Each structure stands twice: as structure tokens, then as C-alpha cells.
Image (cartoon, rainbow, N blue to C red; front, side):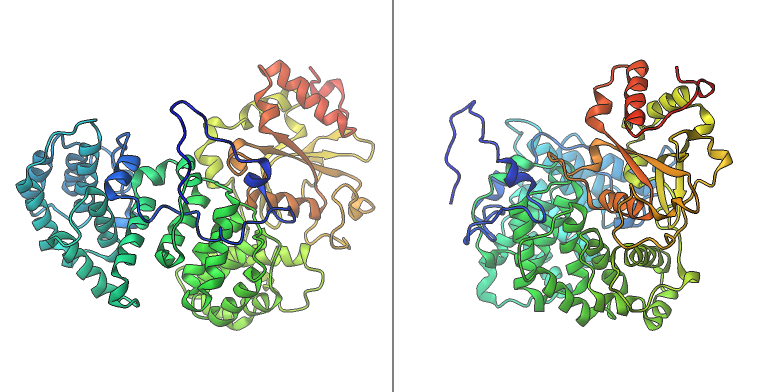
Length: 553
């Protein structure tokens, strides 16, 4: 069903709040026929997609070492000839110049340069309302270069070239598309009969749209929400993985799309490996969204039981997503905590990250699963879960309110009465931590043990953080000020990301009293005096008090 045409200048109707932020336990139900009809129109032409996705022109492509292997770390002025050629291709001013850089440097050209050339060609064609005509000989020469060298491409490079060639309008029966298709089929033998080739072409168009660099960098929400119908047979696991990764990357908590992924996972259960399933499940944990699909959890439990020993890292990744949703299956926990599984992963390249995930799962069992009686992670195998601020916080530190809040606390309480970025057992990094006496006085942290015991001493499972049982042994309460920055939430919503919600939930269950500082309130403070007054009100509302020697300002 195509969307009704709107008059120029009219505004699209905004979705209701329930449709945008439906979560576990909320009343939202998709219509019976809307399971997989919310993806890109399979009938959209390649030209229209290129117009949507290549305009305005995208920034120069940055290909990292994890994908291509020969880009020097950090780039910089001293990059080698391979990196220098990539920079020349990214800055080419015309298709002819692009081809000249490739033809004149045969010893410097690597496989990853050809996707760069195709991408730059798309930018040149899409950078002007009326792009100059490209000589057919230029396209033929570029096509011949790729055809000649594509046998040396890896499968990722082949996929990228194939998607870009579709966007650029190369004929499907031309030598370039045929050579790339042949190499793709040679690496990944098709499981579908020849009669489904038109469907495969439509699926490739979906893949091309979701793989476009501009679409990857910028969440095209208006494009996603106006998606027309696509038949279920048009959708492949790769398309659904790209969609799941896009939702997770841009924090897009779109219930219809998430329900479509859940339904696809259940419908294709027997055809999916655990390595694909981990990518499909990723957005549910990250976006803190438990789907309404009733077979979602039983399906994942069957997949874990079937393939847990085949792909250890994929298994713990799936369990990590389920941990964020508070849906851990006991049978899978028995397996990953078994001595055989732990010994098996000890000698793998992913041993450290798996041990970190297992340590987090062990903490979840300790704090959230009173009925679990199976094996646990041995103490000698446990590591700190998140020993430092998360990557997103470090990347966005210049937008964070942490520095000004720290200065406000310093002037309000004094430097000795709070700790910043302290990691508490079993490995959660706290923004700010205060030690408070039973009478509410803020105590110097150096005179107190800032850590509460872990595991909690005689703490009934599910006990509220505001009523810790450890006060009889240690009267000092620990208050954690939690910054809730804008990027800690799903986009356009008030739902915390799964990792954030998990950290706050576990800190509360361990006995820490949480004081959230939402970004809306922090952004509304104009200057340090207002912020100090805001923090004073927040702390006094908890019954906290401090003397003039702390600098009550």
C-alpha cells in the first residue's frame, strides 16, 4: 500500500506516543497483515534510491582497518602510498580523473579502492542537480578494471561493489553485474532456485539501500516510517540484519520494525545460525524492547540449545541481549557456566570479552534470579564488567554535563565528599558517589569504604535500594548520582537504553541509592550558580545535609 500523496509544504502526521515508545507490558498490537510490510518498497527504482540516498553528497568515506586491513592506524600525514591513493580517489573532481588515478597506479591499487571509486562516482553524479554526462567509455573502463580484479576481492568487498553498482544504475545483465554476481555465487552458493532471480534482485535493492554510506551515517527516520509494502519472500537474512543494525546504531525504537524482525526470526528459525541470530537480537536488548511475538523467547531458547556449542561468542552475545531484557533462560545459563564451555573459550581470541560477558551474566544471576540453582562462574574467572566509562560517553565527552556537575559538587560539598568515575564491584562505573551517615550527613569519602559488599550480605532478591539490609553492619549509605545524558535514551523517547537500565537496576539491587540527573533538567540550568542551586535541591530532597566546612556556597 503506497502512502497517500501530501501537498507541498504539508507536514507528515506524527505517530502517537504509544506507537513510538511501546515497550514491555504496554498495549500496542500490530495489525495482522503488518508483520513484514514496513520495509523499503521492492518496486522502487535504483535511480530513485540513488536520488534519495546519495543527495546531499556524502562526506569522504573512511574505511577502517577492521574492514579492509591495510589502512594505517589513525591515518595522518605520514600515511603510505596505499592510503594516499585512497585520499586521491576520495577527492577526485570528475569521473575521468577518478579513472586516471586507478589506471596510473596499478601497483598501489588494492581491492578496497574499487568500492571507494564507485562510491566517489556516485557522489560526483549526485552532487549537482544536473550532473555532467559521463562518457560511456569511462564507465566501460572502470567496469573492466573491476571485472579483471574482482576474483581477488573478499566477500565483503564484492557485496559493497554489488550494492553500489545497483545504485549507480549499471545494467543487471552487463559484464560488471554478471562478474560480481558470479563471484558472489562462487563464495556463497545460492539456496534459492533460478526462478526466484527477480526476487533476489529486489532483495539486493533493499540491501543496497540499507548499505548506502549516507543511510548508514544518518538515520533516515522519515524514509523508514514511509516504507511501502514488501512481500515476505523479498526479504533475506542479510536485509534483516542490516535493518537490525541500523535500528541499534541510531537508537531507533520503532515497534513495527522490531516486531517485523521478531516475526522474521521466528518464521526462519530453522534456517538461521546463531551468528545471524545474535545480530537480529541485538536491537531488542540495546533498545530495551521486548517484542509481543509470543514465540520469540521459545524460539531463542531452541536456537541456543541447538547451537550454543558451535559459536561461543554468538551464544554469549544473545544472552547479553536477553540479560538486558531480564529474560535469561536457565538451560542456556547451565551451559555457558559449565566447566566444559569455560575451558573451551579459554584458549580462543575472544576469551577476555567472553569472560567479561559471563561475569555480567553471573552478576545478573546473583541479583535477579533467586530460583537459579545451576553452576556459576568460578571466582577466579570473574573480571571487572565495565571498568571505565562506556565508549559512547568517552566519544561524546565534550557534550557531557559531567565536568560542570563535578565543579558544582566541588563548590557545594567540597572535594573530599564525593568520588567521580569510581568503579564498584562487580565492575560498574559510577558517575558520582557520596557516603552518607544514618543521620543524612555527607561524609568525607576518604574516611569511609566507598564500596558496598558484593555479593550483598543477606540481601533478599528484589529488595529495594532505599531499604538496604547492610545498614546494621555499616550505617553509611552510598548515594550514586547518575547522569542521564541525551544519548543514554532511545531516540525520540524516554526509554533508557538496555545497558543503562541494566546498570541502574543492578546498582539499586546491590544497595546503592540512585539519584538520576536527567539531561532535560541539566540543560535548563543557566550557568554554574543555577546548577549549584539545582544540585542543592536534589540532595536536600533526599534528606542530605552538609556543614559550612564543605563549602555550601
